[in-house]
Image (tube, rainbow over all chains, first blue to last red; front, top):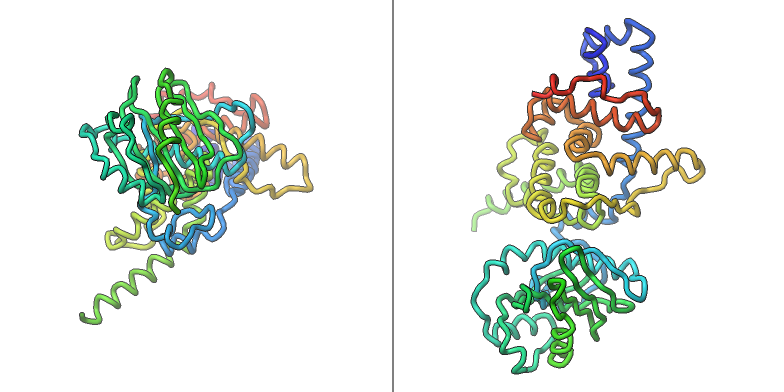
Length: 243
Length: 184
């Protein structure tokens, strides 16, 4: 085995036990040192990779097919977790956090990530939706999420193309998507601990807001030029919690 | 209702729970290093085991369970996250246990290595994860990644070369290896 081949095999698998590799290793001190050094590195790599903290109770939750837990939910909510509410009006893609006035807590960031993941998952579904939903359909989702949307002519004139319950690890809520002036706009209404203070959610393409909203949070995501505050004002006026 | 389905369900549950106990930690570690985020990793693991439960009957040999689960997880990661977050490079290191609290040098080493692994190109990182976390052979990795064995070995070589270079600069640059000759 020439040096090039030996070197490749030593780094590809320093624990190679094939006879030819073992013999080649023993043939020179340099080769032995290379293998020993690489094995030592490998131990460091293994230690680092294995140092990941496994979430508590993961095994039991997997056995019970339970989702990732974050906060205790009220019993009634556990029954309706599939009907979470995200009033989402936007094509959500990659969201990163732009802090405006205060640092979000870890829980706030978790909510952000949960919302992001949800948008990722749902985007292919609502992107294909073209029909306007009826007010009844929208409010059915809102109701399951623990809220009520008062009839509002300004909202009724909007093209609302998707409404579905959702379950985020941070909480449950309703997910509604409508067409904004620049594209889809998303607002999530999530029953979870309100964030400490409102903060921006955005990425190079999208902008958004996470806003403490009574019993939960309102998350609005849209294109950069979308007037998100308009939707915030409308929802703030029309929405109320009934839980 | 006959007794047979009940027994079948019980057997299935028992088999599934054995699988969870034996493999959930490795599956989680693999998920974590694949997507580099603790919350995403947990969702991926949940999704993976849910799918495993649904199609448990298709697993003929429990010895192949780890490769089966890792393959499901890779597919779910690609389906759910990868195409949406191709630029995610920050790693959530709150999920990393600090096992060397009393040894600052080791801690520094681990942090450097941690960052180095996290920023390895995916083509190099993935076979390394499968080898070190999964304990798979080159051939098994080739099957999981749908690559040929030579390509896998070359990528493993390059992955370790890059990591080694961090600790011993210049020690193992892969410049002296004509990789084009090795990858098929």
